[in-house]
Image (cartoon, rainbow, N blue to C red; front, side, top):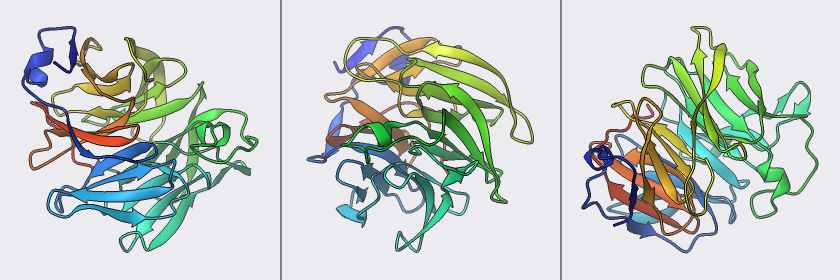
Length: 296
């Protein structure tokens, strides 16, 4: 059984007979999966090979963009355009015309280059939130080795008017992030800290009352990385061994064990109950009893 079950509630969320299925493989380092809710395709990044791909049940695998400046995390804005984090170029970009035109959205803060934007989300107000660790500057397989200009690894909010705000600067390496279903709380994990923090989101986007929400622990390879919310109030987060499932009270119910180090995931499929998981050189899927949130 590909699970580390820590509570009876786990099998109510992930049926015991669910199978982990590889849908694509032979990549360098997969990341950033997103699911288009009406066109029913999956997009993901291969950071190491500087490619972005689309996959669908009917058409299989095809290239979305190459080279991608070693893009990592992706999301859709409110208009359904793909937003991507570029490690090598240290910028957040928006794809126009199915990727044929790339528009930079954020490149610098306080006159200094961003580190290497990593993961990104968009809220219902059109605000874009993203993490900016240093991975794309310190790992040659994930970026370009170079000095860091900013003195911290931050979390940023980009408002619809183009204003870029630093909302947190005390993470070791901020990585995955997600909002609660009602957008009243922002969850951000710290890959080197091994935990998930939560912050309250004010109407104007200010964050308050930052606190550790859960530690991400277990056996196997992996650190806190991608993160998503469900309509039922669960939080899923990559971690040691695979994808960790937490209930609304921050109790880890169990882990979907992956054959390779898992990096990120998203919900998709007709009812947003299929979990698509990027894990090192492959992309997998598994059926769940959970319901993810559409990105737009």
